[in-house]
Image (cartoon, rainbow, N blue to C red; front, side, top):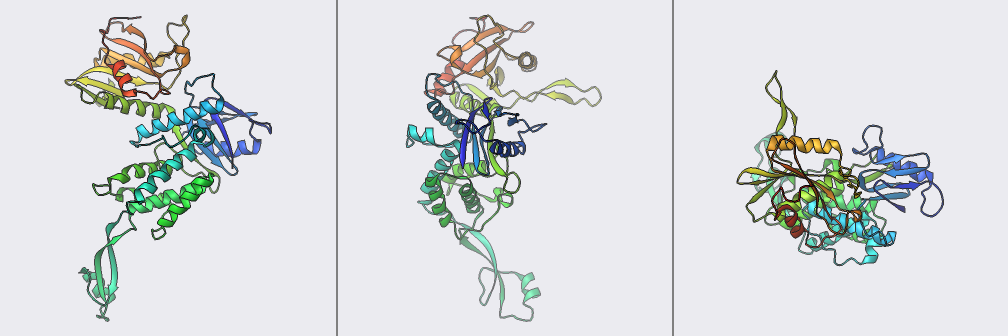
Length: 437
């Protein structure tokens, strides 16, 4: 399978030259992209299929079709002087870190070399992490649970199923309709793990991953084959006896039915594992802020609030509900509202608006009115054009309100002391009126 890589909002031209994609491969990948829930009206929400190129949009991940795959990486502000391969390696590493935080995964990346990050695609790296975690868990034994069984036996085992006994064995009392519990590996959790392994065997093109997946499939030989749509996710019980499997269940969900990804597209057409960067960035920052402020007198709500902008005269109900990404409270009072935006703000000194959209400002104005927050922040990803350090770039008083709207950036490439940096950004040492732009 021929792999291709493109950045978010970047283009991959058609052709047979190095760095180009043959047109028949482009057609196949575009068809898979159009089947995604992110495709939107017109089908161009993931890939724009232009006359001479494919153009990625604000969705990242992997598209796989017959004979080819396309890796779409986020447009993160890496060091421009480095090689493309090295930049892509850094981006893959940071994207997987974002996924790990969002999905509550403990991912150890130290065993992977720089060469691994440069040569393997995002999909193969995720498969490798899954294989490592599953192998480690299985070394402690395959999880088993008592499963209710029914069988017709010559001696009583468990309890007697009276209804079945007198309908099926009324004329043959030598057989007893028994109902009993039996310790079994054929559980909902193991069926999900097997389905994930089987699914990834079809997707992986790495010989090392393929070998490990086949070895893992052998472990689940006695577990019932279940197609992904028929899996009973609600029956996969995680308790104190198998808590280590929570992360594996999250990864299996990511591969098989995650809220981020598409399903298999048609018969043999292809598959996709896709992430909408706006949503991923929002959840990533929200979870990090929740951790950063743990142990303080501040409480954090993600996608909370839900106050309405208007009241219906007819019904008295609310209209136009608001859902701020992050609300920070002290003693129950809202002191800070944050909305994340996966956009690049401008570094031009002659642009006082910094490229911030008017609709985003209107949104923050509504939050100032409804939540009475003295501080409101539009938080963007940092890039090198803004300088070497993330910071609050501008503060503006809201006309008619005792509130400040500020623009700030956070460097998602730099993973060092991320919680400390966010804490410093959120718990400002100065008063809100200091340094107002």
